[in-house]
Structures are given as structure tokens and as C-alpha cells.
Amino acid sequence: MIKRPIHLSHEFLEEVLDGEAIAVDATMGNGNDTAFLAGLAKKVYAFDVQEQAVQKTTERLAQFGLTNTELILAGHETVGQYVTEPVRAAIFNLGYLPSTDKTVITKPDTTLSALSQLCDLLEVGGRIAIMIYYGHEGGDMEKDAVLGFVKELDQTLYTAMLYQPLNQINTPPFLVMIERIKG
View 1 (cartoon, rainbow, N blue to C red):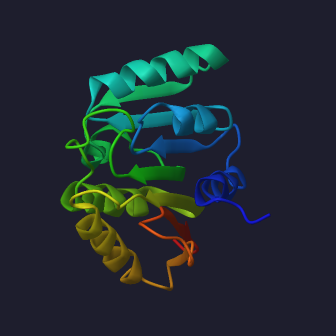
View 2 (view 1 turned 90 degrees about the vertical axis):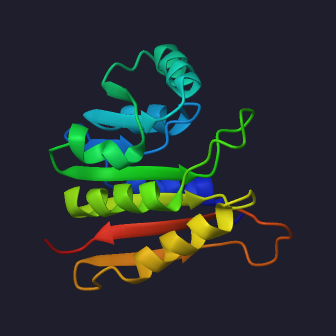
């Protein structure tokens, strides 16, 4: 069976995570990715602008007894203020937090700032998974901005791939994968 993009994103990151790895969840949401990363990495920094996301993530982590996280109530564009060590894995789920205010969305300028900072922090062999949900107002602009940014990454330093449903109606989410191949 073909993997859904979100499942492939976890497999892609799981391959490089271990007990020495630093990971970033750039969009905390309900805490699913934060918990996934925390189960594999030494430390996880997780960002979100919504208090509800921090509360949900705190609950999710407590369910699994995970304490190796720093939950940050701030936009992912502030990643460089909190993370100074090399990053092995990062994940983004772009769009909005399901079952909440759909006007609170990730935005192209802050997302590109976070991506740029994380690309610089990424250690050789490190990876970034970007789930792009764009079926909302402003989603197409962010999708285009992210794809434009990724296409311009130096191919001698990074490799980038796209995993996308081709025969789905509406606007199915898709995955962009980045790996740093050289320092």
C-alpha cells in the first residue's frame, strides 16, 4: 500500500534520529509530531503561537512520559533564538491547527524565515520534513513560497524531494523532504 505523506514524513525523519539527536517541531499543533520526535531524539524544541497547542502537546507528552522537550509559545521564525546546537531533524505541518480558529495559519514570511534558519542549523545528514496543507485561504501563497525556496537550495549542499498525490480532488496535503548532504 502506498504510504500517506504524513507517514512517510515520520519514516524519513526516523531514519536519522537517535539518542544524541536534536530535533525541532516547527508547528507543535496537537503534539503528535512532538511526541514522535521526543520518543527518538535526545531533545526536541517545539514551537507554536497558540496556547491551546502548548496545552494539548503538554498533555500528549505526559501520556507517554516524555520529558525531553522544550515547548515554546512563539512562532517558528524565532527558532534561532532558542536552538543553537546542530539539528538532526525538523518537521513542519503548514496550515492551521485542526478543530480551532482557521484564521490562525502559518504564513509564508515566517515559514521561510524558520526554514532558512533550520537549513543553516541542519547537520550533514540531517533532514527536514514539510507537510504542506494548502486548502485554506492563504495556503496557495505559502505553498508556492516554500516550493520556490526549496527549489533554490544549493544542490551541492542539499537534496530535496517532493511526495504528492496526483489523482486526488480538492487540495490534498503533500510532503517536501530536504536532506543536508554537505557542510
